Image 1 (spheres, rainbow, N blue to C red):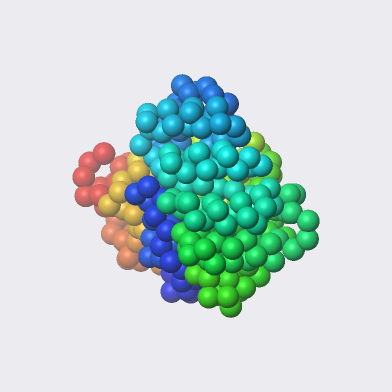
Image 2: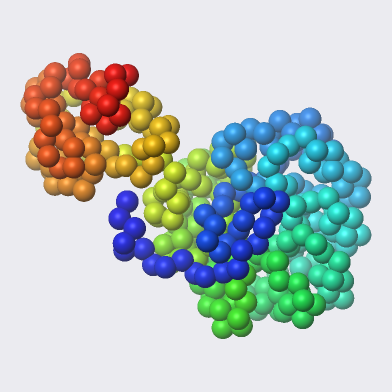
Length: 349
């Protein structure tokens, strides 16, 4: 990944959520939200642990009533990942959960200004001002800044801001304006990115990739959530794929492979999957670029900046490269993957 062409990431303060930092020099954080009934403690704990195993660093839970505050507290005892309480409409719930949660998310359109000021004075945990297009009449950026000023006037600055829409183009434009306005106001608060209600399957992923990915390339965004109408654990790999593709957070090896054509004389899809399975999980290969190419026509040029290359060289033959230089020529196809692994990790696999 060529990180030299990346725009500089917007400078923000660091906000600590449990032991996880958002903004500042911290990596861009990955989070999700449970979709089980908060009162079902066992299901929530199971889902949160599955999300954490998939790589979620923060998990949000809906807390609609005081009864749910008690359930939230019990869930928190049983998991290790920091938990965010999502509260709407009832200020007494927000105040109650302040004593338990690692972070509070509110949609301030559901609270009046006096309640927000009181929340700022009493809170000892970070708060996300989460403005959604569907719940705010008028300008989302104006609303977010107005609410942030209430907190700042009450000497509370552990804020994260988000402005979300189900339309990725609106979400992009609005977050660009938000970042500009925050900087103009001297508000160095981190920004949470997400395309809300994105849907599921390829549609939901495409919207999130466009919206979140574009802003990350702009240098905007400190924590992300891909909102899918699926098991929340499914959101996590998409988050990391977006971060990897934009160069904002490299967590694994990068694989480049061609789509194949009639010149390819081996099953490149099968080979690519096999190589990714064998090497993709190895932590010491983080950021290493491995190219799998069907033939020498475009293969040599396309893998020019790769650390290692697997390139078809003719019927049943493969050439292996390291830093653009050939290291093994005309390797039998049946042995080529094994030989590549030896070149990459210097062990027999």
